[in-house]
Length: 178
Image 1 (spheres, rainbow, N blue to C red):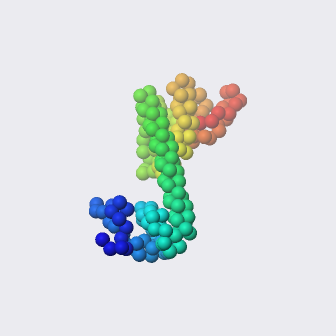
Image 2: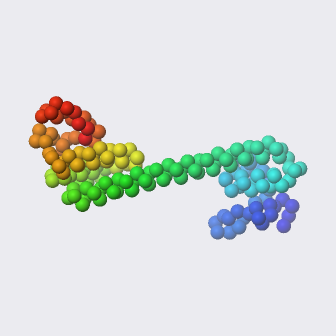
């Protein structure tokens, strides 16, 4: 192994094979801002173990900051993904509850779905909506669903109510959110 190669412990897996990058390649990629996460870690390891490397302290500082930024972004993405998965699971529990009570859904075209209970529409949603926002609307629809299960007001046209819309109810002079 030549002096320009990083040792086996500092190799990375690339397409199923270990890859030991040449230090000059890493330096070039560093200068161009093209290092990927694994390469940043490799180059940082090289710099930390070679006190005579050119621009060592500045590059170590910058690489640590870049690696920390990358890891924070990964954690944030995982956290956001977990929130979306949790919202999707909660929505699924609502739909199971609705279906078990006799509700059903109908697709309208390729982007709209309407949920019905005893022939009355209580929820309309559009595909492509953020899972967390979708769950908020579904919770409002669940309140409308519960009202339909228990009592349907004869003067209320639920088929035209979108979740979150305030509807005036003439029998009790109050507003309700559906």
